[in-house]
Image 1 (tube, helix red, strand yellow):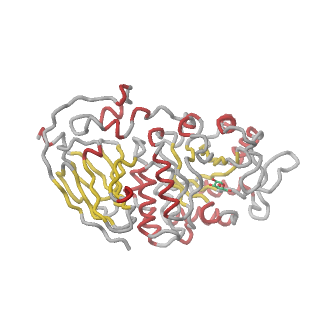
Image 2: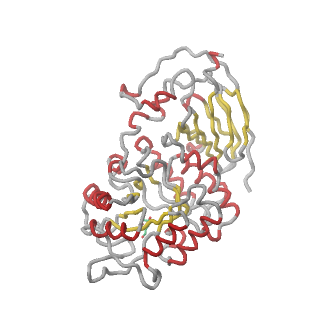
Image 3: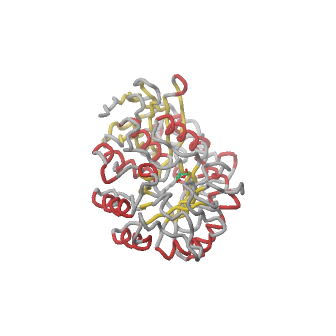
Length: 432
Ligand code: GLA
């Protein structure tokens, strides 16, 4: 089990010299951000650190994913070994464990649900061996539990596991998904005939919209064509990287790649660093805690990828942390990012992001191979160094300090991650 680190607090009184609000790069900033995060309290670097200049420029207007989608997906644990029994039992488990109540409502079937060929009418068909009752019956079952059903197809002629893809069948396939009661489409990128994603992904959006059913559109083009730069108008989320696997190396690499696009996420459209591996066995408790913390902070879709029917208590404890989930689902919808690195190879890391009601989330992530003390300096967080904050530890579920200025530090175990909520107290220390 994880040991909790000790929190040491350094107080420093610095007079705030200026109270000028500066807009990053001279661009107009969205009012809701400007209103909360201004001086006194926040520093002139705040909008540069979090690059708020692009916030809200993308919002897919289908009313969905105002906060990152949460649920489960079959791929990471089951791959092609799926069936209607697995999907139903998973839906049952999401409800019985209480995860559904915490927001995990999407039950998403990934690749391998269909037969290798379309039927004589050109329709997609659920594999009769594994899904004998068909997708409509499964959607009805899932809906009765208060959950939503997701399905998978591909913006190419085949899926990655060589089932029929939806390229050139967008309209009919979307109609079929809608008629089955599907609520979510993950749209993959295999066998794409070398046609640009920008040409292959919009037709499915149009087809989904035309059905009149609200279907969350999750684009999976693996980040190949820098989707953050254009997908916000097309999908509710877009993968920014190649597939995750259940290792520390994969998870950390993906976190860094996804971080690059932080400025482009917002309500309605999210960067997707791929599904969670928490509970699949390839990482330690500390590494999974870091994985879950950083995915939550990055406003990633939180799609559990383990067998929720047989989760360990540790896995459940990680994915059910309501305070960490609240960070992910915060109404402001700004993706947190890496704001400071130190130590050998930059392995002592501070990640942070703004939250609604003038708060900040701060993660101290130790990517070194030994325990280290990590310091979050106000300068790196975009706070005036005189600003006094209270600090809550989101993993210990405790208020750990109040009236803290300038910086705070904690001892963090190897590969572990601490997560805190910082609430600035009224005004800056200089004012009090
Ligand atoms: C691709 C996707 C994965 C998964 C598999 C299924 O690799 O990126 O997330 O959907 O296909 O074949």
